[in-house]
Amino acid sequence: MRFEERPGYLLAHVSGPRDTLDVSLGYWRAIVAEVQRSGHTRLLVVEDFPNDISTLDMLRVVNFLVDLGLRHVRTAFVDKRNDHLARNLLGEVVVVAHGLPAKVFASVQEAERWLLKQ
Image (cartoon, rainbow, N blue to C red; front, side, top):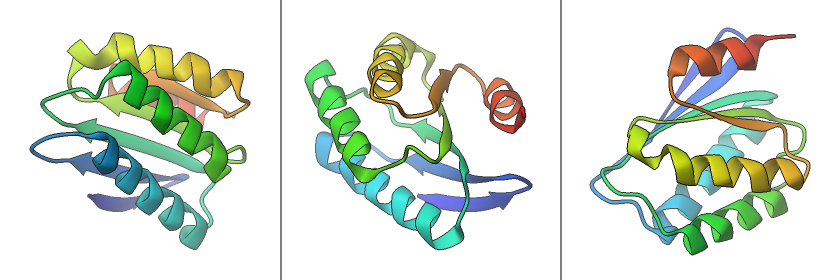
């Protein structure tokens, strides 16, 4: 995991040999801590794992994110593995239904445009 301060937002890169529920919960905890430390209200998360977690685990992660209180953070999410897009879009629907300003994208460029749009 690494963070980059970009003009107008915080970029978080997460990757590894395998994603699991514990890995996802861990990196989201670290991201939220960095958002709170830095004071950013815009966040781009770029994920790169060879596998995707199960739908049930993804829903657990979404519930965890709702509990963390990211309602004030406009969040864009990009998975480098486009074959994970369908599950990530399901996560977007659930997150948005809970009132979080978040969106899933297929590319970093699309995500940046949305994130920085006023």
